[in-house]
Image (cartoon, rainbow, N blue to C red; front, side, top):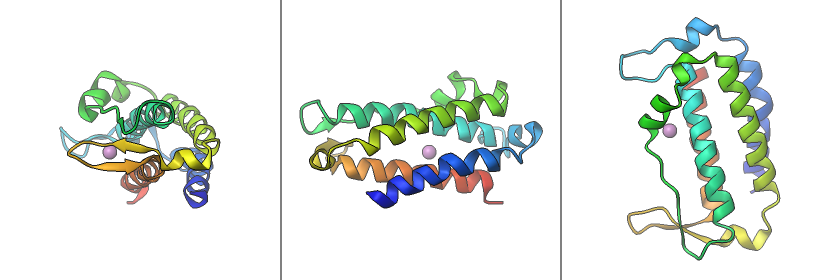
Length: 148
Ligand code: NI
């Protein structure tokens, strides 16, 4: 768990530096008409943070297994209108959400990390698994933004 927290902390300091090197134009280009631009991917990470924050809090007090909140990712990116916002504005939201997520995660008591969550299709996981999955998903998309 400490490694997961350290990685999230690392990205909260690193992502603003890396995004700072991207131009508005570069971050707005869609590689294909139906593929997200870099700023839309960053926006998708904001949607993920919003949804996962709900999960991390609710999993601690709702009856177990907590049935996780789902979200339709393409609809969210579209309706949140990231493509028409400055990348700096999306970055500020990303920083605020992840700073809060880090604070929430860091203060979860040890025993609650083992609380159960229903992620659908008969799969039951622990809250700790959800948190690790959140950071892995984040890293997967950061690789898409900064990888090439
Ligand atoms: Ni994703």
